[in-house]
Length: 387
Ligand SMILES: *Cc1c(COP(=O)(O)O)cnc(C)c1O
Image 1 (cartoon, rainbow, N blue to C red):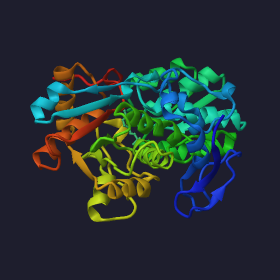
Image 2: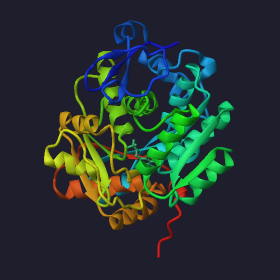
Image 3: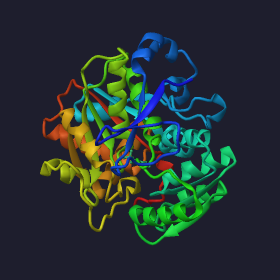
């Protein structure tokens, strides 16, 4: 059962039938799923939902899949928020938390988005999938496609982490290593999709990966007893997590589950690829293309993001900001978090710690504010050795 009603162009607000396999709007922009939230408000009980088994799918009424048999699941969602007491003490913060999405199937939060997108596309008749990826999204698609018994074609930079290459091969997906970055992989994937008639689940180029990722917003609200934190720092590549959470906050307010208070949303990027940081501080409406993108944090190596406008809107409407840090500081922060808290997080997530340090130093964050950082992937997925 779902309250999904239609899709809406994120730029023009033109509406589209949700019961069709569709990717972008006629304006070439991301489509966002819309639900009958007035009806949901009258019928749904947030406390009853939180008593269901911990899973992304406990929010199924607010996800796009209507037939329970179409839900492809590996146990995604319901991952914990950990209080970071030791790191908090070091930084002089009394309320520092981390939502640990690295505990998801395939070791990253990409599982949330791809569980939703694959399930919904299968419900609408898709038979074969294709994805361009920095690594983790390909691993997640390969796993969910294997579970569904359908074929996945994965286009990945040839310098992606070895573990991503392995997980795609192990799942039996068709792997293409591309000389170049995720946008080069995107071009090859799009051509192959056209030829093969495959469904392309590129970031924000179909409406439902963002729906899976928005569940992180619902979960964090519930974990803080429906009082959103003051600051959220998020490692930002294509932006689905940021955009999804921002959408979830809006939906929850319409559902009467939360009030109008919003966290200041912060995008964390690497200095080697920081198109969101640049556009934010330039006052631009849309992100540009970052030339010669280079960072060890593969998930942040997204030189051109179709969701740029939506990300910038969320950052600005929330009173947030965008900060880039060097790879050197990211590596240091990864070690610091692991040694102080026992949490070995991905390099992307370590960027949020380095950004946090920067914002504390600037007094942009007050000592008693409630701050939430995101671990988006397990540190075990990298192959970087500290020397
Ligand atoms: C993909 C990825 C990101 C970036 O996520 P977006 O929501 O696309 O901005 C961050 N961290 C990890 C580990 C990733 O795999």
